[in-house]
Amino acid sequence: MNLPTDPALMPAETLLALYARRALSPVEALQAVTERIARLNPWVNAFAAMNPRAVQAAGESEARWAAGRPIGPLDGVPATVKDLLDLAGFPTRRGSRTTEAAPAAQDAPAVLGLKAVGAVILGKTTTTEFGWKSPGDCPLHGITRNPWNRERTPGGSSSGAGAAGAAGFGPLHIGTDAGGSIRIPAAFCGLVGVKPSFGRVPQWPLGAFAHVAVAGPMTRTVRDAALMLSAMARHDLRDPYCLPDEPRDWRQGIEQGVEGLRVALVRRLGFDPPLDAEGEAALTAAARLLEEQGAIVEEADPDLPDTRAIFGRVWGVALARLVAQMPPEKRRLLDQGLEEVAEREGGMSAVDYLGAEALRLEAAHAMARFHQRYDVLLTAATPTAAFAADQPTVRPTEALWRDWAPWTFAFNLTRQPAIALPVGLDEQGMPRAVQVAAALYRDDLAFRAARAIERAAAVPLADPR
Image 1: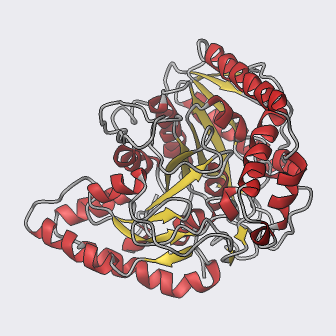
Image 2: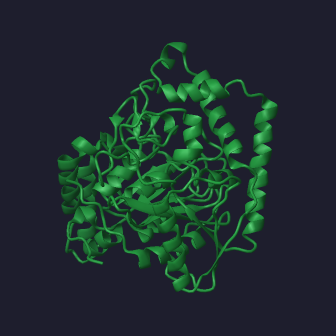
């Protein structure tokens, strides 16, 4: 595969190697990225806000590299932050006209992790309103478009992160994922999207979907995603769910391959998720790539309860609570579909909600048992390629499990790690992706399988014009 010569398209690992050899500076890398942003972002619409201090931060990084004293493994690498997370000095608008423009006082833990190792924050990327849906638009910032095809959506809710990654607006992008919001835009945009194990990356303040949501990397390579996770996955006392693990480099062991690993090719997640013919071809191709590298692949069913019914309640109740806490005069400013779901689920009883939570634990138990036999699961990532960017949101509850997230939300319920990554392009030149998942806290196995697929697949970068 030909390596990019434009610094804006280079992986973080390549940038860092060039910085170390004094063959490229962080300022030059930032200039290449900002040139692409100026040229392409007017129609991509990936940013909610730009960071005017990025130039200063890149200059400070350049001085550290010149002195041979980088402060960390991402020093000088451009990165973005989804506008569901706090970036000190910037408002957290969450894609909504109902939110305030007051700047956040502190960085979210994931942002703090990137800054601590020298990443240069470019700005904040767009999100669907409060992260509620998969089409990549919101009332505050309008429609974000897919760099592979401006008529298509980048997906959501990490819509700006997906679009920024595909457009070459830097190599590292923080997304969040409560039902597929990292993995869906990664799949639609030809990126690697990592939903880590719940608790791996600390979060604060917690959002609407706190009990199933995570923050994670969106990058153009699996190794960059592992490197980025290493910076994000640091204990933070603000998050009561955060794992107390010691820091580690998640690239360790990533090249060990899959020989001897048992891989379950999964087509049912408590129901039959839809999948078009080209998605099925991509899934079959990924299974073959793993088999050719020595993995033992067989079809298997984890025998889950109907995850549609579980996630629909978790999703709906979270939105109902969000709307209930909002002053009545602001509700008219909301995305109509969000309000529709909240109204539909707002009358759910506590007994029904606790019943859904019990089924969530049952699904997690079933997956834990399943992983006693299988190291890794392989599934589709999305039912289709990216759909139209201007497509209206109709019957959102049905769209959730039919068009948006049928392959992704089960892994939020079970809290296990899952990675979406591209395996090829369809007949229209749009990326098609698969998803690998591992047992809870075995993020290392998910990375190994994803890296094995990536090495064999060699998918090209987008070429937006």
